[in-house]
Image (cartoon, rainbow, N blue to C red):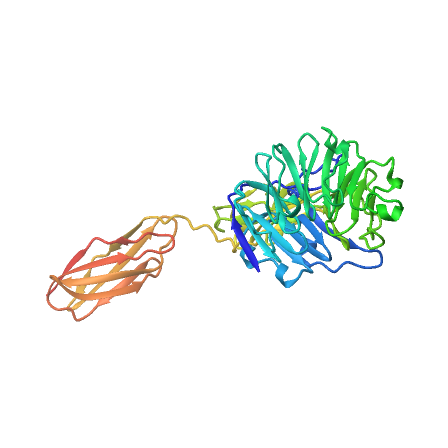
Length: 512
């Protein structure tokens, strides 16, 4: 089941992980192409995650969401790919022709914000589509909780819709200058531009009883919501955790609390899950730390993984998804123009994720054309009969990545402009009832080929018409059994690939 709610939103800028110490990506859930890359998955220790579609192995991803064992991914080209989901959660067909700017997925319901401002819902919707009178016409980012949604508008204000149990859609009055919203199960947080956090919704586990230091201006650089609590990355690189599983008499009761072993570490990225107690943080050395409730955690981090090479991480109780910055093809090279000598072909370069150096190369039948490294190619006689390809080359560390356009048709030779011709009829030789003459066609630069049409009239009556072929630029014509009287002969040359058509001056003769 799916439903759609039309919006009039413009470009989306939603929220992702902030990396404080290493050229951070922009604070958006949908990464731009420079920070997008390959999706990487891992699961519990001793349990491999369910496989992802092959398409995701070669497609750069700008957003990835883990929920249970399911994956919802947004490619840099704006297409949504779902894996290991229920039939209800399969991506709706109506998104096939849309460019999507951001997605949200809470494990039951999913939604996508399209480039033209339409919010499309699917899955087990519950109250997610209970919009009421909420104005969703200016969303720039959004998130989904249990039966409700929360959105950020272009002017930094926040809206919420859906089930309002425990005040989860009661956005605090005067909440402005917000740069990120994040939904827990039944509560939500807003991170303001001044580095303070505001929370609302259910507070049974202290999820919106915020630590004092996350309300201090300049204190917080990122915030994520758990099922019944929150995790903040402070501007000094330390962590704050509150809500369910952060207090108690025993260490087992404080499974969401930041482990004492992390004291003194500086962190650059955070993630958590709204389904259970699972938390993740990347420290300044690139080490990926996972902690939470019991051993049921996606803690089987790939050996040697450098967390500082990750642009985004999403966490569930069973699965971790990361976007690893990597140069990958977003759109392929194309070329346009007529494959003909003297014409110019124009190449549209491929686009890539990451920040590679870009160069171009034209090829003829797969062989590079010397010096042809721009985005246009003037075709010469050297390319006649060959198929042309435009290549974009992305160079970063490692092997360059190339994207070739489909080849052109074989280049056709230059056809020079036709020249004028002159058609003449020789003096007509008459013998009794037979007339004989020669039609001759001349032009500069060669001997005309093709045909001439000869016509004879006696008075006004047509008595002869025939089209004959030229031989060496001439056609000898003999016409027999003509009747007595005055006759007029005309000849018209039909032209060939080099010469224009022309007509001869009429000749007159008499049969006695």
